[in-house]
Length: 111
Length: 396
Image (cartoon, rainbow over all chains, first blue to last red; front, top):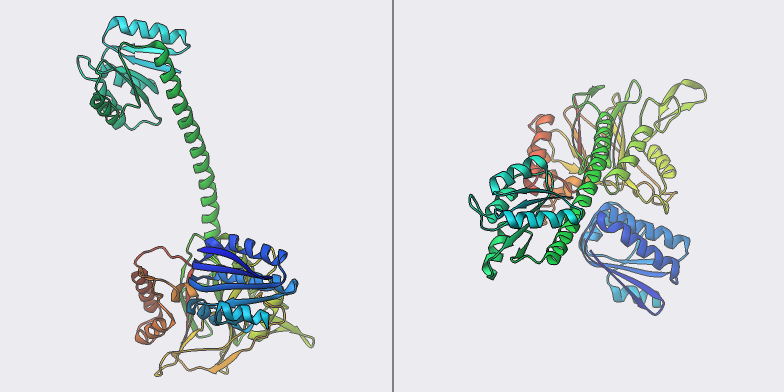
């Protein structure tokens, strides 16, 4: 997995690419937590180019969701079909805020 | 350090021996490669300086023989040669020499080369020591894991169990020794049978620790008031089975994830009423179970709430259905449906449903055996990336 961090104005953007699995989870979790701790409460996790996701990776998303609730702030997810299908299977789409694309996520924060 | 000198010229041999002893080395000196090999094998000498051309066999042959022998340590070899062409050096190194020095021997240069060789041997010794410590540690860890794996298997129900007319069989493959999956099947009271399947996020030791804990809490022998039963005030000796959503909601309150514990789990808990012939089950983010009624197509039971541990006040509901003799219920972990072929294609829930339909005439144990073969064939190997479990209940 590859993880890029970007910033647009006060919005933190994490772009994930490739297979997002157990081996990547500790690093991804730590970096996302740092972004939330030091950020402005606006975070987008872009998984449009994630080709596989397992339950450990899902735990990272839940951890981000919970950290953002405490902050408090807003977390937006952009999903690929594979990610969306796991999120729906585990019913997590009922708590995550999911948007269709990165530009849509950025304009959601602007609105 | 001991050095073996292999040199047929008496004069050179004595010259080298005196110098080496002056430098503080212990020396063994021989004049042919056969004696040399015997000494290397019996005396465990790790440093050899050998002449190239000698009667009875060359220094390169000695290098080859030493490298072919299986020795418990590395032997550092320096070839001494009068030959002055690059090709000979290449040939000598290819035969297994570590270094070479040309005649006439410059003693300072030879001493420097010996010291370089000593450094290599020192590194090799350190590496061997670290390696053996590492292997000893790995062995302890593996023994521990093996013991934990045996404990985990002992928590699973017997494959031949039949409780109040409900029979069970299962498949269980941890991706490493320990699994984050766990399931069980037990009698709750004279009329009710309980069952569950749990899949803790991730796999390995942390997930397995969580699955052990959950399994113990979901044990029916923990007294009158437990996760599975509660006592009514007017009949304290006759605990009543809790409803499926109650059990899941209680676990959800108790197992909230936080900064230090991010391992949520998905699960299904069900209660069978063997007198009313009804089945109630509650799903928490778990792959949808497959129900196979006699004479009708296999179908998913689609319903449910969030995995356990996500939000404290998550709501859980149950699905209720009436069953008939011969009906089957299949519970499984996502390790089965997400099992990937070498091309990266997942086996998928629909293939599993078709499999359940196609194998309806077979006995439950035969279905389990076939499923095992089918998923191994699909992924083209015998080791699984995620924990695998499948639990089949059949109404007898």
